[in-house]
Length: 308
Image (cartoon, rainbow, N blue to C red):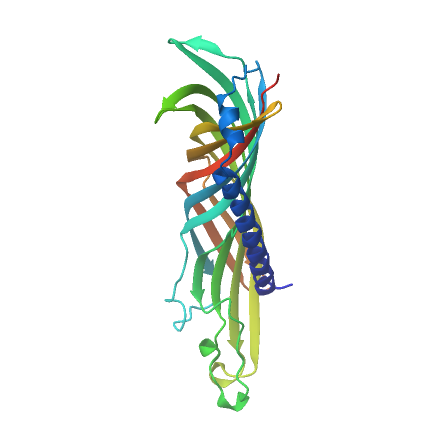
């Protein structure tokens, strides 16, 4: 399967993922907006908090980060397409996090009751492909003229150039923090602040397509060269995450809550990845870099074992 075939297949997967994401989001919104006496009656109940509270959460995040990329090859420069550059340096994609949290016993500090907690989660991105760099008319297929007698120069054929596509595969997150109860807008909330570590795996697909004209004036017959390389990169981040949570409903030993969150994460270590593609005669080098900050914000549902 060629690089162009893979990108077409990825596009089909992205559309399917977006349909699934919309259905899940619609279900979450329906749950949040559904009124009823059960919520009001449950909110009025007094439930003694257990010393340890495990919970499961599901959310929807907007993931935002800046990236950049370059490509250099040993092929001769083609004035026809080299000046044409198109890229998407801003990666703005939806992410679905699925997480586990464990809150510990309350302790008093400064006249307030605080609860420490640990949490970890996996983040699944959707619509995650971004063209970081594009020079020329790739990923269009190379168009060989029907009339070879026209002797069209190879430099004028469409479908040549360089392209670098970044795909955010998955993210993992762990953190530790402190939670406390607060009253906002005459309603009880739980505010939580944690310091988190975030790992991001990215797949990089770099390709260069070049057509050599073996005839007079770089005309027919033509030789198509394609250099293609897939590479994986892992980037590391650390930063604060803030969460504001409120009670929604209770059923038996379980409590359902809704929350909003915001996180800002700073890149650690090497923020770049370089790799090469080559054949018997030529080579290409691709460079990819993430910028210093990664931002995430969104909402979610949490199911907590409250005990009896």
